[in-house]
Image (cartoon, rainbow, N blue to C red):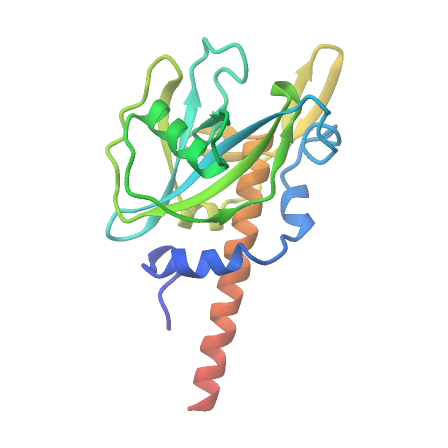
Length: 225
C-alpha cells in the first residue's frame, strides 16, 4: 500500500503534471457562493487589475500543508477574511514573481520555492482584480513572521485536512440589500469562503484526481503480481 499523497515527498512533481491538465468545473462550483457569476465565474471588468496569490505547499518532514492568513480587520477590503498571501501585480512582474514578493511582505519570510503551475484565475468582484493562484512547494516548514499591518494570524491547513474536509453548513451572507449563501471550509476554527474557498476547491479536486490515479496504478501492479 503506497503512502497517502500528503506524506509523499514526490507530490510537487505529481502536482506539476496535474496542473497542466484541464480543471473540472464542478470542483470550483462546489465552493462558489450564490451570486458568483460576475464575482468569480463571470468575465472580468475591462478595468480589472492583475493580482496573484501564493499557494505554497510546505513540507515539515512528515506531511504537506498550506499557509493561509487571517487578514487584519483594519484593512479596507476583505478585512478579517481568510486568504492566501498575495496582492496586485506590479509593472514588469509575472504572477509568480508578484506572489513571491507578496508572500514575503505579508509573512516575513521568502523560503526557496519551486513553482509548479497555476490554478484557474478568479475574478474577485469586491477588489476588481483578476487573481492568478500560483502554486509552489518548499521543502521547509518556515517560521512565518506575519506583518501585523496586513495579517492578524497565520493558519495551517494540512493537505490531509483539505482532502478529508467534511461538508459544513453554508454561511448566510448579507451585503447591503443582498442576502446569499456561501459554502465554507473550516480551518482552525475560521471560515474560508469566496474566492479562497473556490481555489481550495480546485486544489482539492486536483489532489483527489491524483489520488485516484495512484490507487489505479497500485491496483494494476497488485493485479500483475
